[in-house]
Amino acid sequence: MNNHYESRRRGWRRSWSFVAATTGATIGLGNLWKFSYLAGENGGAAFVLAYLICIVVVAMPVMIAEVVLGSRGRSNPVSTMRDVSLEAGASSAWQVIGWLGCIAGLLVLSYYSVIAGWGFAYIGKLLGGEFVAASAQLSGDSFNSLLAAPELLVQWQALFLLIILLVVALGVRRGISAAARLLLPLLFIMLIALAIYSSQVGDFKAAAEFLFKPDFSALSQEALLVALGHAFFTLSIGVGAMMAYGAYVPDQRSITGMVSTVVLMDTLVSILAGLAIFPLVFSLNMAPAMGPGLMFVAMPYGFGNMIYGNYFGALFFLMVSLAAITSGVALLEPATSWLAQQFRWWRPAAAVVMIIVVWLLGLVTIFSFNIWQHIEVFGMSVFNLLDFVTANLLLPIGGVLIALFVGWKMRKEVLRDELYVESPQIFWLWRWLLRYIAAPGVLVVFLWSLYPWLK
Ligand code: PHE
Ligand code: NA
Image 1 (tube, rainbow, N blue to C red):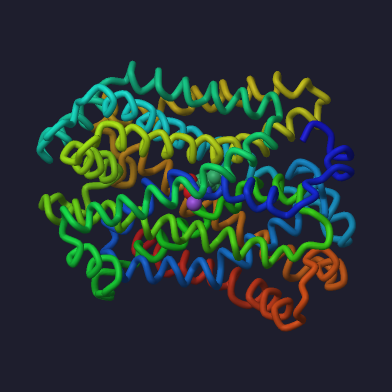
Image 2 (spheres, protein in one colour):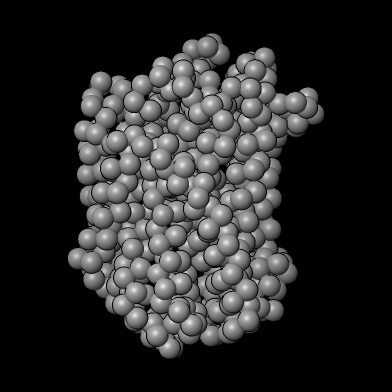
C-alpha cells in the first residue's frame, strides 16, 4: 500500500486475493485462543449463541460498511475518513473513526503480540518433547513457568513483532495473501482432525453440551458485552484494518458476497477450535473458566498423549503463529500507512516507529503476568483491563460510528455503486440493519452491561 493510486490501478484484480487477505486478517488468535476461553469463562452455549447473534445482526453489517469505506476512500483510515466525509458533505469530525482505529489497533497489537509469542514458545516446547505422556498438571505447570519468565516473554514477543515489521515494511501483503490461500485449507484439515482426535480421547458429549446447549441463567450482563466485543474483535472491525484492506476490493464484485464468505470461515474455525479444546478440558476436569491459558494447557496435554504428538503439536502451534502473523499485519497496517502517507515518510521507517511503540506498550501485558500480577484495576488484572477496554469498548465504539456514518451520512447511490449487490433486498436489509439495529444495539448492550458498574 505504498501508494494508493498505484493500488487503485493494479488492485487485487481477482476477488480471491481480497478474500484470502481478509481471511488472513480475520482468522487468528481470536478464533484459536480467545473464543474458547471466553466461552469457557462466560457460561458456554448461551454465550456462543449471543456471540453468533451479534455477528449476524451487528458485526457483519458493520464489516461490510467498513470495507465499503475503504473501497471508496482507498487510502489510510484517517485520510479515507476525511475524503468520504467531504464527499458526503458531512463534518470532518468523522475522521475520529480513523484516529480511534489506529490507536485501538496499536493497543490490541501490544497484547496480541505477547500471546502470539506464547505460540512461538510452544513450537519449541513441543519439539523438545516437553509434553510426552504429560499429565494435565504438568501441562499447567509448564504454562505457568512460561508466564513467570518476563525475559522469555519479551524475547518471543520481539520475534513476533520483527516478523510483522518485515512484512509491513516491505509491503509484501500479496505474498501473505498467497500464503493464506495455502494455509487456510491446512488449518481446516488440522482442526477437523484434532476435533475428531479429542472427541475420541476426551469427553465429546460434555463439550458439545457446553458449547451448544444454552443455559441462559449462565449469561451475565457482562457476558453479553463480551460476546459483542468479541464479534468485533474476531472480524477485525473498528480498528481501520478492514478499511485498509477494503482499498484493495476488486471492482464489480459483490462486497456482501465476499464478506459473507470470510465471516463463515471465521465462525467455522472458532467452533472447530472449541470442539478440539473442550473435550480435553472436560475429560481432564480442568476448569473451563481458567482464562487465557485454556488452549495452551489443554492442547499440549492432548498432543503429549498422541502418537507423533510432538510433531503434530509443533505443527499446530506453527499454524497458530502463522494465523497470528497475518492478523498482526492487519493490526499494524492502519497506523503505519497513516504515518507514512501523512508525513511522506519512508514506509519501513514508519513501521519501525510503530513497532517500537507497540513493543513498549507490550511490556504492560508481559508484567501483568508476573511482577505486576497482584495489581488490579476495577477488579481486573492489567492485561484483562487492556483487553476489556480495547475489545469491549473501543472496537464497538468504532463500529457504532462506522454504522452511523455509512448508514445515515453516505448517499444511497454511492453505497450501491461500491457494494455492487445483485439483489435490492440484500442492499435494503444491510442498510436497515446498519441504521436501526447495529448502532442502537451496541448502545443498548453498553448501557445494560455497564449499568451495574456505573451504579
Ligand atoms: N480478528 C483477529 C483475530 O481473530 C484479530 C484482529 C483484530 C486483527 C482487529 C486485526 C484487527 O485474531
Ligand atoms: Na477472528
